[in-house]
Length: 260
Figure 1 (cartoon, helix red, strand yellow):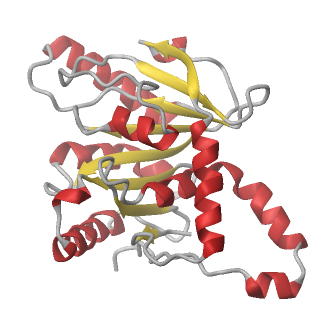
Figure 2 (figure 1 turned 135 degrees about the horizontal axis):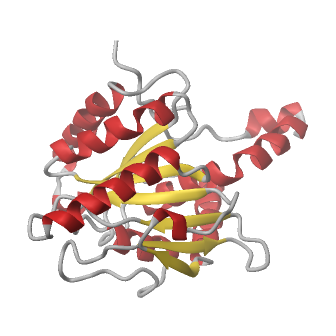
Figure 3 (figure 1 turned 90 degrees about the horizontal axis):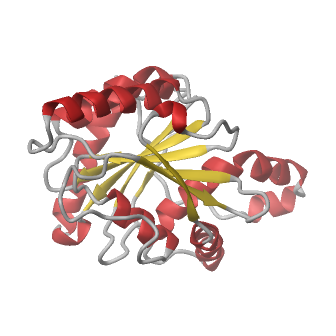
């Protein structure tokens, strides 16, 4: 299923409850470990959700906002300085059910070429080969749209996105800087970009997001929660009485359709 979330104004109480559950889950995030090489990451079957984007795109800020913790993920004031993969456990302390992975940013010119090339290789290996990788949150400045480097990253992940092995959520950040028509235009452009790599098997979505105004925060938390807990949710749905299923509210979503 591919979804494009449009916001959360006027949501039913049951949907608001779902957002609260997801945000409470994200709030449980705590630091696990840091690694400068792929082989330093722990061997694990726990689903990983990676946050990626250009340097200073707000990855660490987004993680902190989702977790409702000011200093969980370190946000460097100098773009390109973060050169480690930082992992955070999410879920019960005795049995975490997900890991958030804060990846180094890309595209900052002041970083030495050797360091830039090394991290390009590490990120490529992580996104293409890391088995526990369950989903990717791509941070894109809503005012700039998808840059060439963002497009390269999408191409890198395309095979795993196409078969649904890895899910993708594009956060169109700094949405507080846009008016309503500009926000809709940003969504249409993102639809065109993501539609080009979407298939019937892929799970690709997008949402306007602002760490400042909290726009899209509940939608993002719900999406990540569903990525991890979908099998359990499906089992509950299968066992639900028909009248319960009929009463369930429809998700506020519009599809990211494959390009014709």
